[in-house]
Length: 385
Image (cartoon, rainbow, N blue to C red; front, side, top):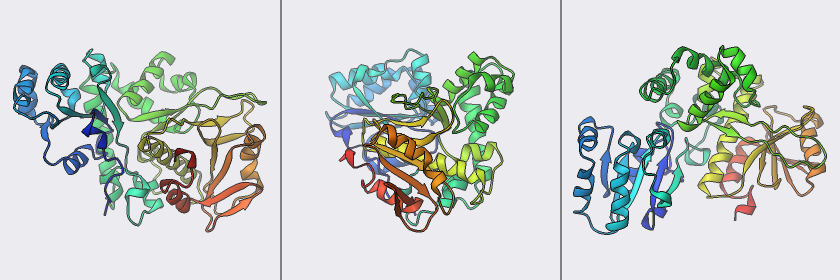
């Protein structure tokens, strides 16, 4: 049912790569499909992992039998950080090309591991995007999320529950990242309530019963283990004073859905609107990354809380407002109009659940499905061409 993934990793023929991505995004499947003849080390295999932990030099000894330019894949590389010294030596002296895959660079950084000093390009595999799925179903995406196993499931709740539990156990407990798992679990619930909202560390700390410093560390954990990401505020002030604090999103819409027990989502509800906004931000983030764009993704919010834009691309080149209503009104365009007053060059887009596109006073109104098709066809963010 799923097309080939958009990320193809062609850079490997000239450079080595770090491939990061949250668990179950499909990294291993992609690597085996793209490079079936590569020399492959799967560190989820306990016997292989233990052998390399005891003697990291075994990697060098085995790879010395390969030819210059051969591709070597080390999956879940963060489980044996000492291998990176051997990888460094092999890149320099044997001219091998490595793909180093994992779900978190945190353990590597915390251990002081050799991150290869710029000798490996960083790539990220995101959850599925709409362009990778034939007969893409928006409602299914909002309810199930976009991890392959979740999107394809008829009843994904148990899989999502197990997924979150695995993360808590494997990423949080095993690495001893936090001392109080109960406080962190409570934080996840509060963070879900704050998903797609401007981050207020003090308020969240009061809800969790921990310090603001701990809350900042918890958010850092979510970001470094690829469970979430910050969306920065657009801060170029022209007339109106702007908020400077970031928003926070879990990496996939299914995570807050599960934590907040908002399933199934029904169009016309606030929960559906929140999920739709989250999903579009996911798509925009992946689109920019897969196109190697240096354009930023941010949001715009005036300090007096009068106006807000959900997504701003680059230096105000494109402004996007996301609504889940089936018929937009002038009230829905006020944020875009205010943004246009300060940034008249911006392309203004309003997404909605309408059936056909139309133009309202210079604002392009697009049905969500058509917008997604145009996005991945390169017709929305033309400055990337």
